[in-house]
Length: 116
Length: 116
Length: 144
Length: 144
Ligand SMILES: Nc1ncnc2c1ncn2[C@@H]1O[C@H](COP(=O)(O)OP(=O)(O)O)[C@@H](O)[C@H]1O
Ligand SMILES: Nc1ncnc2c1ncn2[C@@H]1O[C@H](COP(=O)(O)OP(=O)(O)O)[C@@H](O)[C@H]1O
View 1: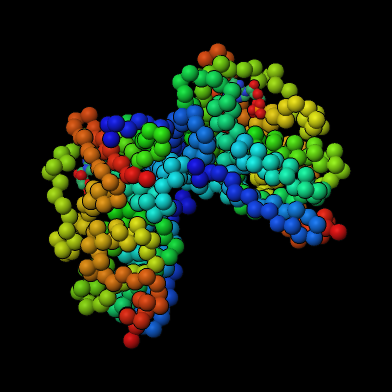
View 2 (view 1 turned 180 degrees about the horizontal axis):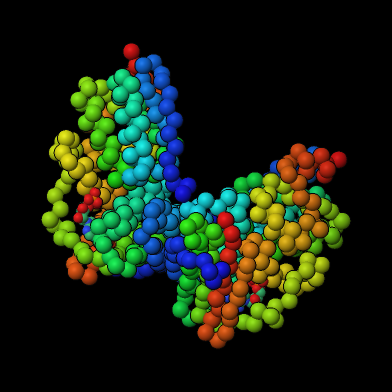
């Protein structure tokens, strides 16, 4: 299926940035959670999900991201998002993700806040 | 409807270039024929239709362009096309338009042949 | 709504299969664009359609193996709103029994799910649900 | 074809209205992409779908005011081809009576029209037409 999600990981200024491309449905959400898990196990405490290549999500996929928030609370780390479409941002606000995760317009804005 | 066709006209090296943006259906074809008419009345004998902004056409719209070919034969002018999608180019070949009109990959290639 | 005529109506039947909700978003897009709805609003419609479809896919347990959608452009002289109906002939549910989800309750709890209806209500102007033993019908509208 | 199973099937009903064929191309795109058809082929499918729809819109004179499409992904384990059916319940025609159009005959003649069936045949692998007093059914396939 062409709807599958592609992920790319880069490390910038102590922040692990995960770029998504495609539909974040249940499989996509699980894929992101798996990658986040590995990054956390590798000692990363600050994760930035750059959704620049994602134009569509569903609530099942986004629900799975709540697991990442849980893990971040446990390790006192931080999860943030950037480059959301207006609709995805609205979805995050409806779900209350915005209370537990930073939401930034773009990567420079996110890194200015997260990097150290 | 967002499917309406937008046209832009520019004169380059003695060639009247018409840029299309949108669906070339019956209304779109008529719009192009009208513009071509005006250009011919203004003394233009060489017309280039640059379809860079057109991803979809239908046979009714393209049939109407045969009228422009007729007028070009009458005035011994030339009609050419450039920036066709592979499917639109295939359509032009199926309809035989390629026998009466030049088909070029892009505008520089077309102007190199048409301009004087 | 009752006063508004249906200017055009498209129906779509989707099999219950992975990612088939994407086909529904494409029809929604074509209909919304045909009435010149602003791009951001079209995107919200897509999100609501995805949620309504995946609910019917996942929860209806319909034996038909498919769901039914209708996209109607409403208005008199001019298109005024888009009405989308997502119907399944599954087991139904009692919408009033569904409690609002809160993120604080979801964290460290077993299920993180339960957001679809809230998202649909957030994205559309109106969302009405009729559900019973013959299945579920979700009717959503959004003005142009 | 007869040996191949239907992996998934979507049906679409379109009203006869300006540009409604665009909605059909969107469904076609979603189905073709769901089976990973190459972009250029998907584009050819869209062109064929446009032509089949506008024929039914223009020539069927159906009293129902709508036309019916089916998009079926055919294959056994893997998607092999896309089969698109465009049906109307109009007056029908005799496909064998339609003569091939030639550009040379169209120039300086009254009608420039008559390209739709040729384009459909050029874009798809197979095109079959059943037509009679109950209407017309165009069945087209294209391999992935
Ligand atoms: N079409 C449907 N058929 C049966 N039950 C449904 C349907 N849509 C929703 N429901 C019920 O409503 C509940 C809440 O739905 P929703 O808010 O979309 O969250 P989720 O799908 O994540 O559970 C579902 O868990 C299900 O019990
Ligand atoms: N769905 C249909 N119902 C009735 N007649 C049709 C249908 N499709 C095609 N035809 C007939 O076949 C002819 C040729 O169609 P086509 O090649 O698409 O060219 P055009 O539509 O430009 O005439 C039409 O003019 C019409 O008489």
